[in-house]
Image 1: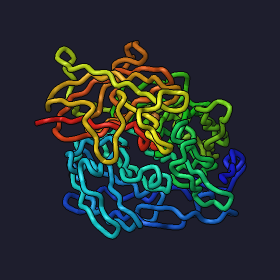
Image 2: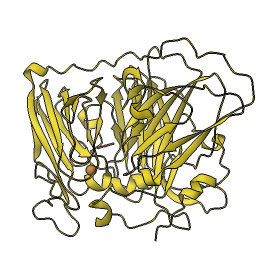
Image 3: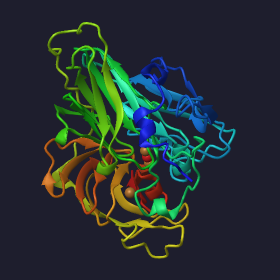
Image 4: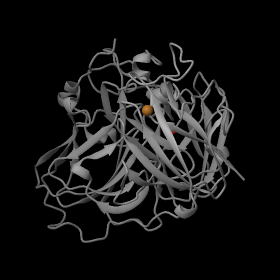
Length: 462
Ligand code: C2O
Ligand code: CU
């Protein structure tokens, strides 16, 4: 029985300090050197002092996995070893990699058996905040802690005083701080997915983040949760969004002051610490309004401000070299999201699903007929139509896309993303160039939806 290691744990909980949740950083990898990454079981103090340790699955014994850092133009080489009791793969979420490096079992690679190895290698075309996670048995493997940040630094980074990373995690734990079972339960699959009862930042409950008055921080946010959506509000501060899903966009204040992060999504913020020495400000997650809670608190040190007025330096990032969609010659297609509780269940649905479908189609076993077929170089304009009563972050592998319209209205920034969030009954129109041949996944990043039908293939032919 999952108990609430409650909001209260989050509010008053352990005396975790920011230092305890600092991520070990893999130094910028030199050309040619491979980084060893091993997945396996580990015991970690997830909830903090006064609670038992949690048996997790981790990369290199850490949750989240090591922060992999490269520079744009580098080649990433990852020597992966599978120490898990089951098969796995790694997907490099948001990165433009060759199809055979994309980590999708039965589609782009053979699963890495327990005890097996796989060498991933790809050039880094884009700078930004990305992440990595398994694509086998995803609902179980991610919920056990397998994910990590993948940061590609710009050739010319913007000037900030500190670059901070918050990897957001969401866990469903028992009273004993063990990961609760019940994976694949239709109650999660047909509703909002496996939403947990304990939220972590960099693998720990984070009570305080020490900051200094006057400093400028670049804050990278990654939502690695199976199903939880975040809406972060930085009380007393005026964050500027400079990138979404790793892709730069004109700096702007988030709509309604809230940074929305659905599973899979990232945001890069510039935060000028405008408070005074000794002050404290809450960071609140209010996506589910009746369950709003304090995620953490910005705690100002007592030292004198670093500077009296905000740093006068540009914060706009240079765009990545993405191919621009050719809208005049685009192939257009609708993708209808259907299913879920109170929705139309796909034909042939059994007690374990499929519960969801894209254009009436759900994968059967490992076999997936392509939902969309395109020629390499073709521009596609795809309209997602959510006919369900649920939220769905739709993620496309291989090709970052521009979001052209939301509910029929042009978007102000036509932002590049790799995951677009659709609310109940909403629509979103996206455009991208299918620049690489191969079979690419398109799926909802609520993993319990992905695994029960909300998953399809885009086939790009040479
Ligand atoms: Cu991050 Cu196919 O997913
Ligand atoms: Cu979904």
